[in-house]
Image (cartoon, rainbow, N blue to C red; front, side):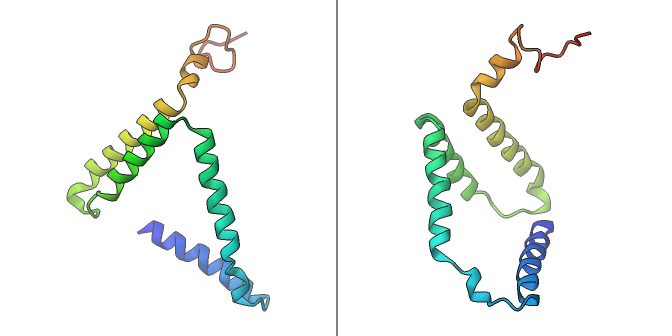
Length: 115
């Protein structure tokens, strides 16, 4: 519910402020910009991730598409599923972060105090 309210507030603020300044609303509709932004985002994801991570992302997107609507009875299993998806993604996408934090030379990520 808060997501919907947030989206309404964002769009209302942007469109309302634009119209208050007597802007032409159709100026905000720029299909070429959508193509540029979506293409750059997709290209960045493809460049930044190995094929194994990309395959995992497509599998997770398929799982998320099959998730039933939120009800009171399935809220906890759903949040557990999302947590599993994100923790799996974090473990496979950034394996070097564990190596860095466990390094004895890593002063930035170590748990001990340096005095």
